[in-house]
Amino acid sequence: MKHIMICCGAGVATSTVALKKLEAFLQSENLLDKVRISQGTVAEAKTRDDIDFIVSTSPVDVSVPVISALPLLTGMGTDKVFSRVKEYLLA
Image 1: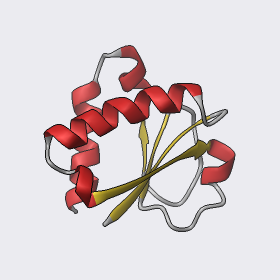
Image 2: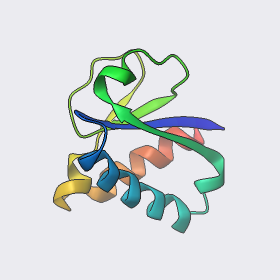
Image 3: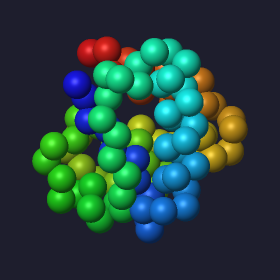
């Protein structure tokens, strides 16, 4: 089971929007049961060592892959975000 962290600056507002859209996508692809999702701040993401990849609305410099969640907020480019998430989950 892969572990994703959804994060933003404060760990509340924009990460929650991204989380809901990501959960809906994963549910539609029957992948929700293959992933563990955590939510938090960018600062917290930097301290975690149990994350396979991060989906973030803010820049974060970590050693695991990071997918920008900004398209999930703007509605433009969401397919690319979803395909990258699916790619990492199935890798």
